[in-house]
Length: 404
Image 1 (tube, rainbow, N blue to C red):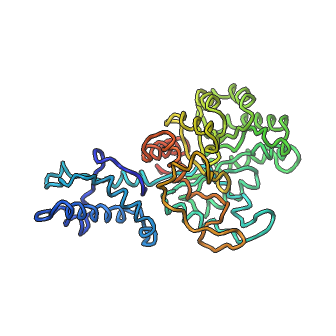
Image 2: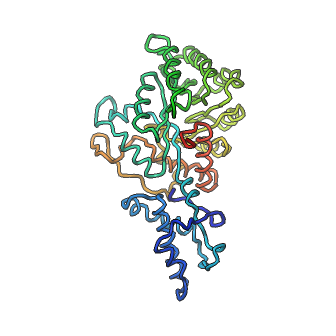
Image 3: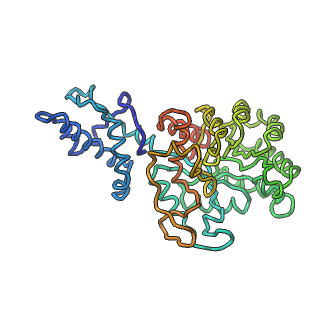
């Protein structure tokens, strides 16, 4: 992961990844201090590129400043690289690869924007393959697709088949669509049937049950009664499958807690509260129940939101973008934490779409690096610490094929 600052006390260089600059950096005789530092920078820079942190020449050029920053953080200002290996700053291939890896646990592939539709008008063809390429370019190696409807579950399954090592999925009916379980659109039986087909699969793409929960912000989409009915019915189903929950709660904290608390002993895998925008006190209450908390751009809008983010325990933190929605605000208190962020790829308005470029106003997984930067800035801790914690928490909860 470029842009992180590994400390020289715990970074190790694998000798198998030697470069011509490595030999130059080790042969310092006759060089003044400036020449020694420059030689070391070339050596470290070659390693960063060679280890795959920046894999294409165009990206190397674009993020030269980020490479320079990482070189500085690794070699520091002390030119004492003697032949004593114990004194030489080292960069571990495994450590850098681990910092590079970022899971992205919430992407709604089925949203209109990823199908090229904006405000009801088709502007371009689906370009999800380009979205994945841009995600991989910043080290986002795992993407979890959020299911909101049963039709969406089938679409997500098709995407997971196309990108089996990158894409995974949830299954469940979102509170917005709660009525569809009872009006003939779909049914609880159809939900259970598809789960029974997916669960026994070798390397199944299904990693979580959801998105389920309560949302009282948009009651015109589904009233409280039908939301609560769908939530309880799906919690009953969840107790029969060994999956973590992928949960939604907005403006419904107390009802959510009251409904789910009796089920906690029957849900040993726990779950994540995704795209959380509640108060600090609500977040801590959900953590006390055993849930993880996932944040994105919508969690950064106000000072109160940032106080909540600051208080999330690292062992409960996960990161997401909730693409194509929930962009990081372009103004307000978060701006100070993005001053040194690498620039995003070029973007155009939907009506001027160019394949291979981002679309203005459409959030993407490649922005996950900025989500991590904001959280690190708010918490006042190193970026690498946030990334490592979030990655570990996501893998521990969802697996995401990491240990297969």
